[in-house]
Image (cartoon, rainbow, N blue to C red; front, side, top):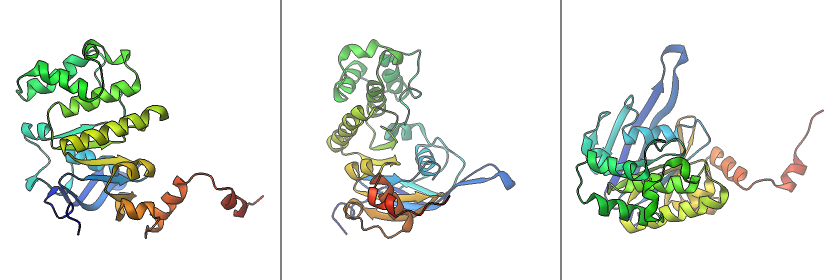
Length: 267
């Protein structure tokens, strides 16, 4: 075991299950999922839409309170309801920067709100520093969300999460709704901030290239279950064992003319 993975776990999920609905209409979104994230590690969860990966993040963040299993963060056992201090300790950046920011609040108010709730002082300096850390000019603090581009909105969302100085950052497809030209900027920003602040992170994505760029290890999910767990070196080497992971790898390589010519077609 590497020195990094020998460190104490920042996040430990054991036998997590989530069911939406009841009876014949019940949907088993997450089925008996277990994994650990080491202190300072960025752990990826990859899978197609509906595989259950975002539901896991929402459980960890305390946004979904209807689940079974066990969750431990920094050796503290947590139930569905979280104390207010937990919100300062773990923060989440959502997929849609258009929907996650309040349309009638300025950037200043959105950043200030968390500081007020957590009773954190020195608010002017913290707001200015948060904007600086995500690469936004100081005068952006008095703009509204509709006055910002998609990439700028996501930078505000990242600033809002980090202004509370969390130790854990949960990232739910943070670049999937952005233009391709902006995605790399946001990923590089997250990579820099994660290293600078020594954050433990979980990154959810359907994009294997994003996972390979950002993560140390990853879990592959299908139909609510983890079908395989591997490190990024094995992923890059194509050393996946599970058939589903192999299919994801094949799909991530895009159109292959030789494979296409070998397909059998039917009239």
